Structures are given as C-alpha cells and as structure tokens.
Image (cartoon, rainbow, N blue to C red; front, side, top):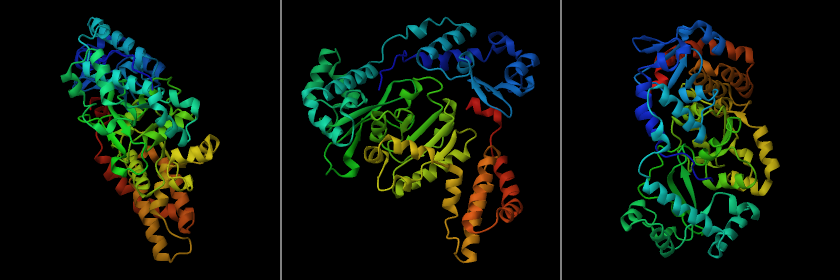
Length: 461
C-alpha cells in the first residue's frame, strides 16, 4: 500500500473554512448556474446551462443547507463541488488539492494554507515511520519466518515484498528507530505502538482513511494455535468506527474507471491474498460489522457496483444479510451483488479459495454472482417446491412483504426477484405478481417512503 501524498490539513481547510464561505457566495463562485437564494439555500435559474449540462430544468438544481458540499438534481444525482470541478469524478490526492485551491479562490480565500498546512501531525508521521520500518523488516533477515508463513498461505514469492504487509520489529529496534527519527518518549508512548508486547514478530498492515492517513494498524499472529479472538490485535486508542473499508484508499488513488466496481471481503488477509494474485478492486471489512452509512459513502466515492464475498460460515451469511438490508435502506447505494457463501465450496473464505482454485476460478465466481436483492428474497423464501401449500405460501409471503417495502430505485431488482421467488415456491409468475400488487406493494411502499428525508437534505448531512 502506498504512502499518502496529500497534505493532511487540506480536508480540514476545505470543510471548516472554504465550504462555509462558499455557501455565502455561490452566485459569484459559480455564475454559470444563475444561483438565487431561496428559504433553504440556493436554486439555479440558468435554464440553458442546466439543460445543456445536465438535461434538466434549472429549478431542479438546488444547493440547500448551511454549507452544502455540492448541489442536488431533484430526481437525479448529487454532485460534490470538488467533483464538478474535476469533470464529474470525485478527486483524490493532487486532484483533490487542486480542486480545493480552485474552490478557495472562488470563495475569496488565499489557497496557500493548503500547500503549507502548518505544523506537521507528529503522530501521523510517527505511524508512517513505524510502518515503513515494518515493511523493511519483512524483506530483512528477521522477516524470513513471516515470508515463509505468507508463502505457506499461497502468496506468490515475488509478490510478498510489495503486497503492503509488514512485520513488527522487536521493541528495542522500534525505540532505536524512533529515537533516531527525533520522536520523544512521550510521543512514542502516545502513539500506542509499544503498548502491547505481543506485536513483535507479527505481520501487520496500515488501515488508512479516505485521504491516506493511517487510522489504525492491525497485527496478526503467525501461530495457528492462537485463539481466534487473539489472532488480530489493533492499535490501542485508535478506533475503526469511522474508517472506510480496509484498503479502499489504494483503490481510490487510481482512476475513476478503476473504482467503478468493488469487491468487499471480510478479512484483511483476504484482500492481500487477492492483491498478490493481481486482483486489485478489493476492500475488506476487517470482520463482520458493516455500518449502514458505508453504502452511501461508497456511492459518493464513485463506486457503482459492489460485490459482497464474505466468509463461508454462519457469521459470513448473517453479515451478508445485514449488508443487503443496509443497502436497501439508504437513499443512494452502489448496485449490490452477492457471491453466495456456498459458491466458495469447501473454502472458508476468498483467501483459501484463491490459493486453492486460482484467479481464473475467482473470476468465474464474479461472473456468476447474484443480485443482492434476489439473493435475500430467496433466503427469505427458502422452501422446497414440493413442500406443503401452507409452507410455500408462508415462504412466499415473507419474501413478498420484504420486497414490497423496497424503495422505487430498486424496482427492477424487485421484479426480477419476485419472478425467481415465484418459481422457487412453485407458483406462476402471473399469480404471484397479482397477489404481490394487491397485498404487499402499495401500503408498505407508501409508508416507507413517507419516512424518508427530503432529497435536498442529503448534501447537508
């Protein structure tokens, strides 16, 4: 994984200084929209521009809220100011900085602070220094045991040095390194990297924010006899709650085309195994927990298709169900697909599958992935075709009630799933569609939509 190139304070300058000022002068900053104020913020008036650029009437383009991050087209998509200046693609790294510089000037500010962000973030620099040492440790003589471990897990030998994994040096070596780099004892203690003596000799990785800073570090034992709950250790005092999926930063550092499709796996080593075999569009949850806002976050970052491939066990299946449920409840989400856990065969996870079956079999899995909505509906309607009528009707009712509560944006997925569930339960599609329309669609749909926030609230949250 690459080190970040972006000044760490660019985002803070953008959100805390530029956006509030920009919100007060959108008419001057973006005159092409013909912005005028309304009770909730701004609405566009230049019909010619909005029709030519977006194919909509000007009144449908709004920028509501106290400090909107962009504008919203009613009935369509939202767009960040940074993306608007970057041809529609969310910018990262140097592109992000250039966009913020442009916005700062439009807001009436000198963009110099972006290139000269003030005093360095000593803790962030310390963590980078530490992790760089861990990566060097992997290719050193002391890293031979870890390299053998990775080779035994199916990592190609030539990929091990560049796969983004390191090995934690002994505490004495860490202290010497940080002393030479000028970090005080207090800074070393506050970083947390010396807080747990079990870290030494473990393989490790850096879990980064969307903008490349190390949010936390993980360290995995090489001992297969270690209890599951102690196999992975994380940096003390560093929460993973608000971090994006592991490895996402590396994907975002590529082109907009590179990040259109993403595979989300469970374990961090699943990601590194796939990377080592040339599969790059992958991120990891680092467990089975997945936040409900993950899907809107991924959509905002330009990811159009998300494929879930979690572990082949009960916990992985339950996590997949939760993920699909979350994706249906947010206003915006990538299209969600599922590699059904039992498609992994005897393999416990993608890591084991790829090392046993190879990348060709992995690509076959992706080709045969299922729509997440259809997969969930089939799970709810799990019943044999020759089961008694009451069981088949009850199974159909479970799936239909869930499908009936889906938002309009999932209408096509809903229809596909209903047809497959009808066949699974032993009924004709026509009969099931009639029953569905009468019993499950209108009332649940109306009730559910009435609780949703107004579209213009999205950019101001």
